[in-house]
Image 1: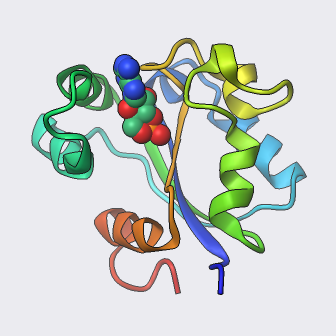
Image 2 (image 1 turned 135 degrees about the vertical axis):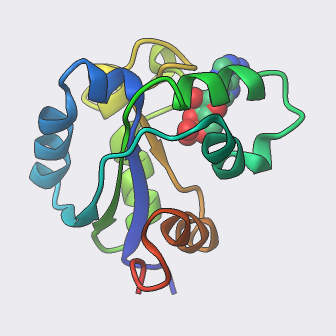
Amino acid sequence: MAGNRTLAIIKPDAFGSGKAGKIIAHLEAQGFTLICARVLHMSKAEAGAFYEVHKGRPFYGELVEFMSSGPCMPMVLQKDDAVSAYRAAIGATDPAEAAEGTVRKLYAESKGRNAVHGSDSDENARHEGMFFFGADALI
Ligand code: CMP
């Protein structure tokens, strides 16, 4: 059964340019409930660990630099079928390919500086929720 919660991050580009409130309001208007959130400035080691699955890919170094370049805002969101509903709400990784009205179409700058992250499966949502919030956040 698809889970009701997912892990989202408002990335340093969007957080640093004051878009967090607009992005949260946009998601709440689409039926997502904010369960928990925090603001942190990740070290390179933390950003590298979070994105370890991408280690070895050509964009990994750039991704780690960017995600440790300023504060970001991880949060747990709730909605039926949360992972796929949230991925639909944020749009394609590259804002140039994102559908109208999606978070990345509205607020992202580029494929690398793309405003938000979202878990891509229920299993990864649990893993990523654990990374920022401990064991209970995705229950
Ligand atoms: P995210 O959903 O956070 O998951 C991995 C991130 O890697 C992705 O969003 C992009 O921001 C980033 N990414 C993926 N492909 C590229 C690329 N070709 N160049 C730079 N960054 C990328």
